[in-house]
Length: 333
Length: 249
Image (spheres, each protein chain N blue to C red):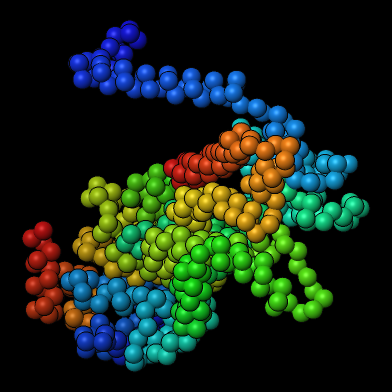
C-alpha cells in the first residue's frame, strides 16, 4: 500500500526517479556530514561550560534562581497558552499574566522590595534578550495603537504629528535609533537623573517598533467597514467606546499576523545590542569567543546560538498561530 | 399629543448643487407606522438618517422626541440623547462580527444604560425569543442566515427600549424567501404600538402595516397618503408611474 503510493508519487517515470534519487542522496550526504560534525568533530565543551552564561549572563551565582524562576515562568506560561482551551478558566487570566510578566522580569532581575539589587550590567544572555523583546513589545503595542488612531484622527494637528513621527521613524535605520538611545538620551536628561543602558535600549526599540506596529494596525483599522462605526453610533455609544469595543478588536484581529511578524523581527533585532555593548544572547556569544580558553570555537557557539534563537522564535510563532486560530474559532464558533 | 418626529422645511444639498432633501415637512405621531417609498436616489435614506443625526441638514427645523435639532453641526450631546431613544436597523444588518449574538444585543444596555450584565442578558434572551432566534444566542453573526441576522439587528435596536424605530430598507439585502420572517417581526412590533419609520419597497407590508405612505422623488415629498389611497388611487402622476414600475417586477 505505502510502497505503491511511493512508487506512484516518486518513481512514476524516469525523470521523476532521477530527481527523487538525487534529492535523497543529497539529503543523506548533508545529514551524515552534519550529524558527524555534531556528534564527533564538534567540541561542545564551550557550550556546556558556559551554559549559565548563555542563559543568564554574568548574574551573581547565588542569585541565579531569580532569572531561572522568570524563564521557567515564561516557559510555563507559553505552554499554558498553547494548551489553554482544555481548561476553561485559564484563558481569562492569560492576558493579564502575559502583560505582567515583563515588569516581573525587571523586578526579579533588578531586585528591590526585599531582593538584593543587581546592576543591569550583570544582566545578560537569553534572559536579557527576552526581557528586551517582551518589554519593548508590550510598550510599543499601545503606542502603536495610539499612533495608528492618531493617523486617522479628524484633528489635523494630531494626524500630521502622527504621520510625521511614523514616517520619520520608518526612514531611519534601527541601528541609528539604538545609537541615539545609548548616546543621546543621557545628554538630554537633567544631570543626576540616569537611565541604565537596558532601559535606554528598551526606549529606543519601543520608539522604533511602534512606528511599524502603527502601520500594521492602520491596515487593520482600514479593513473595518465604516458602517460598524455607524452601528455603534446609532446605539448611543460614545466615540471612544466605539473605537475600543467595536473598531479596535476587529482591527487587531486583522493585524495579528503582521504584529507577530514584528515581534519575531524585534527578538532578532535585539541582537544588534551586542554591537552597543549589551551582553544579550549574541553579545554573550561574542564575549565567550573572546576568551582565549575557547579560541576558535566559532562554529559551535554560533550553531548553538542559532538553535536557541530558533527555539524561541518557533515558540513565539506557535503561540501566535494558536492565537489566530483561537480568534478565527471565536468568529465561527 | 406631540408628534414623535416633526420636520419642517428640511433641506440638504451636496456640493454639486444636487438636493438630497428639498424642503421636506413631515410628522410622525406616536404609534404610527410611516412607510417611505420612492426610487433609489430619491433621498429616502438621507431623510430617515437625519432623524438620529447620522446625516446633517443645511436648513429647516427638526424635532425628535421633543429634542430640537438645528442645522449646525455641533450637537453631539443632543444627538446622543436622541440615539439612546431611537433604534435603527440597516440594510446590511451591521452586526458586530467579533461579538456573539448575545453580546451584540447586550453591548449598548451594559455600556450606555449601565445595566448589570445578568439583567441585560436576561432581557436580550426575552427579545431573541420574541424574534424566534433564542437558540442562536451563543453563536456569531457569520453563522446566521441573512434573515436571522436582521432579526438580531432588530433585537439589538429594541434592547435600548426605543420610542421610535427607523428601518433603512431592512429586507433589500435578503434572499426572497427570507424576507417574510423579517417583515413578520416588524408587523408584530407595529401591532404592539411601536412607532416606526420604514424605508422599503415591500408593497404588501406598506399596505397592511403602514398608517401613512410618504412618496419621495429627487429629494422632494411628492405625496403623503394613507396606503388605501396611495396604492389604489394615487394623487400624483409620478407616484402612479413608480407604482406601475414596481408592479411590473
